[in-house]
Image 1 (cartoon, rainbow, N blue to C red):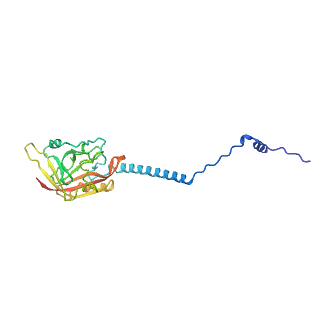
Image 2: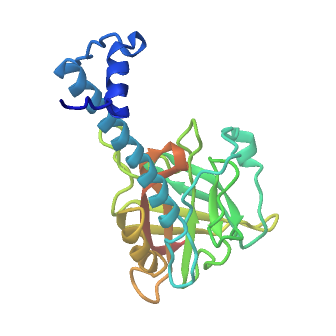
Image 3: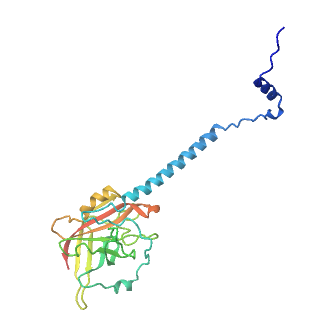
Length: 267
């Protein structure tokens, strides 16, 4: 006669578990997503990633490029609009009464694009090596580290717009449907300051070339050209301003516009 074996603990546990009502869990219905919902979600996710990467790239690109546009003297052209600018257009009386020291540039004119007797203010460099800009957007800046107008060197001028107005050089670059812009052969005049009772000297320049360069390497490489005369040994002037697309996040434009002109006559 065989001896009955005592059930093992494992068997007992299985038996108890099978009878334990607390372990009978309710059935959970699986959740099914429609393929169209999944596809839409993926599209939204990819679009978010794409635009985030574009924003990050733009910001990092500008941080690398701004301040890198240099000529041989390590001067950086203006890349940003200052936080505080004056967008008030000067009155006719303010322009007429404007004075500078004798022998310094006073008025800047380009008749073909509607610039008449714009006030010229002296500017220098910021601590970053960047060219300063006039506080008022309707003034033209003359870089005091460049040659005086009328001399054999290169006189450098700049001017920039504000946040709501295009400023003195807004019509300098050609804009399709808006203005012709400055062109080769156009006349630029610089009137100098004079002592009381003396007639002011006026220098006439003729535009020889213009150039639009993308922010970064293109503008970088052109800076040496911008600070050279189109005809070595002959007096000239260069205008530098911004153009292209406005990048609001970095408060700068995507391109730089250059104008060079040769000294022709002294009146």
